[in-house]
Length: 114
Image 1 (cartoon, helix red, strand yellow):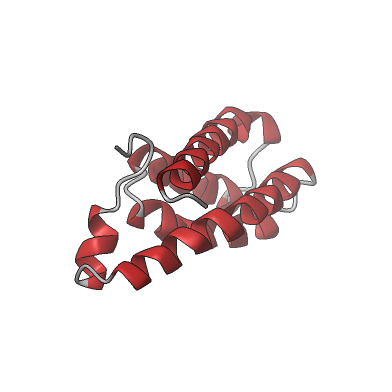
Image 2 (cartoon, helix red, strand yellow):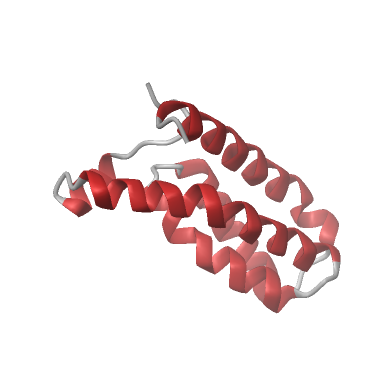
């Protein structure tokens, strides 16, 4: 039973197409960790454009996977990049997103034998 993610939107969007659901899951597991690294590097290097680009890229995926808190927090990251805030202002938020993504990936891999 999924605790850290919810596939209801994916199933609704795909009209219960299992192949589509697996594509979304595979994209999440394979691409989002790299995107999170890019956001992290953007934050560390004060490269607000880079952090924004990757935050913007994963935002719909977090929403689609029912990761409501992480989705709200990625919106905070986007807002932070637009105002070019200080790193310490966003560190805890980014760490929270990272933790949620890590837990969801671990759970998805277990649930789908990936």
